[in-house]
Image (cartoon, rainbow, N blue to C red; front, side):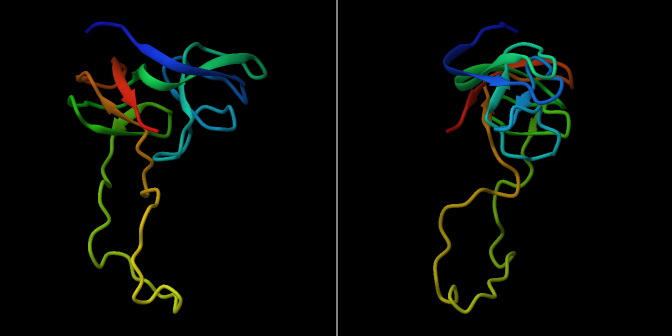
Length: 138
């Protein structure tokens, strides 16, 4: 696999806890620790608590896989901040009851799925620990 990326936007954050290179980082500067959580981007380098470090936010970035990944998979994060294939890509019809009287008869639009999709795989990962190139979503 080629180790390349084309980062269009990297933001500098102050680390809130230890950060591992190639793992997802939340808006709070902490490495992702909740499966499916919303993330800002991927850490470009390791960082100790309190250090400033770059987070690759937009374009193609390198990320550590947490499982096998196929090219084109929509990706979310696991509880260690690694990329894993998303499992909840659709909200099933009738799967979510609407109980609000204000919403009855309304059309639900725009939302974040139960798993936040942050990227799509440009390369396959055979197993956890592989470093692959992904294209971020914004």
